[in-house]
Amino acid sequence: VQLPPPPPPGLEKPHVETIPAQSVKAAAACAPWRQKAAEAAQKEDATEKGKEKGKANVEMQTAKVVVTTSEDVGVTEPEPEQLLTDITNSADLVGDFSAVSVVEVSEPEGRQAVPHLQGMQHQLHDRFYRMQMLDDQDHRTFRIAPGSIFCQRRWDESEMQAQPWPSIWSYTFDVDIVRTSSSFINIGLVEWITTSPCEIEGSSRGRTLAQLLRVSSHDEPCIGQHSSESPRQMMLGCRKGVKWYGDSAWEHLLKDDVCEGSQLRFLCEYCIGMRGATIQMRLWLQPSHINFRRRGRQCIRFARPLFEWTLPPSGGSVGAPRPCSVWVPAVTLFSRDDAVVVSWQEGSH
Image 1 (cartoon, rainbow, N blue to C red):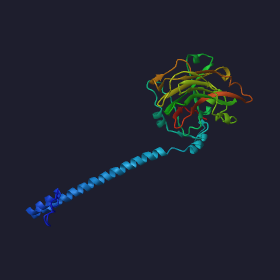
Image 2: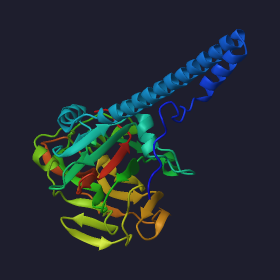
Image 3: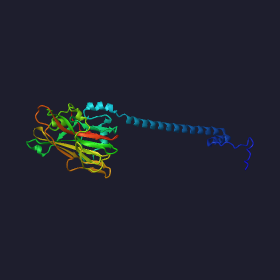
Image 4: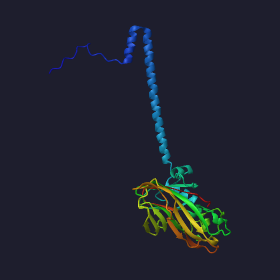
């Protein structure tokens, strides 16, 4: 098959002109004033296209600025080394802060992370801490210091009688599970060794836990026990929903994994007898929304306490200080990237 020869010079296919160029030439063939009008229209079209292109570039730059700003906000969280100094000065949390990110969030942020459940009694919490495990080589236990916990006295019909004792005092704390991969998080109470008795003043309606139990709120001389990773415990394990107590004893309770998005609300009661001696302590699980791995989201409440403990006398007359044992709220993190938000009402140190 032979291809046809190329056309002789001067007979090549004419160049295809654009519509604006064709309109300009057609206008030129008709009249000079039409040529000027067509050229003005062409310039106006080019100007509008330039404006649209500039507007698109501005929108792209604005989007980039917004993304950059959001990233900057996410990076502004303090480093663990900075947080260690802040929390030690605040005396709210006690434990080993290595390999852990602890951030004190404001009240609105905390209430968004731990929303109060509808139809339930509002608890006024003013301390909110977000804790996240950064390493899976170790586990970390964080305690709320007894001098930072505000306790209120329960007033009922018995208070109308002449005898003011025994009395019931209580405090609340909430734990919101923000993130967990395998539910290896324990929540509840751990033992706090301190000295007693101490003469500490407090009002008849509200006291810190240290004032209520007449114990020292300082870390010394038992700071080693306060940072121990294996204290005696009364805790709810999110893995399989088991109860841990003592050193390593456990028993079944929920029989399912407690997953992220769960909101656990606790109430701790102290029964104070004659002369300020502690008679009994009870830990309750208040109505809580829990995300179970198999059963889905449910509202859980128990008619009986999770734990009940008869304490040795920690109050009484002031004398030579002696070691004594009290129990404080605590959270234990085991897995990397697991995160919780803990909130409670703070008392004066």
